[in-house]
Length: 128
Image: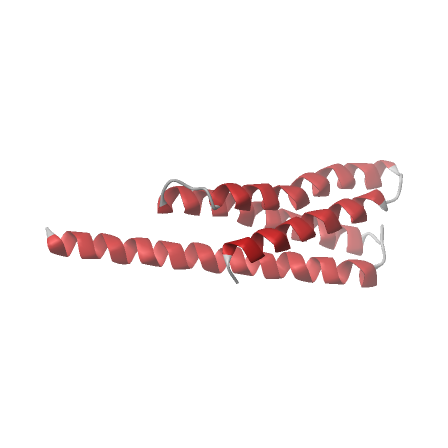
């Protein structure tokens, strides 16, 4: 998957979160959780877009770490919504699965980039 495909996937995920939030219960707890998940569930798309414009590998990793944190938080809120039965689990499982898959993709990208950065540093030190 290239960066453009992942950007699209992130945008689609954000739209799904927005639609899910719009159907959350209009209760004190529903509104509180809605405010949390709308932020954590839509920011990975914008943060990944920013990562794609990173000035360096280090900047790229730092921006991906923000994406990772927000996706992990979104997984948490989806689990809370399911466990509290604010919404049917069957409706949220595909969204939770997508959040987990995106989280895994980002985590692997971080590891891959860090590994490449380490290899580059070793190669530079050998040249010196």
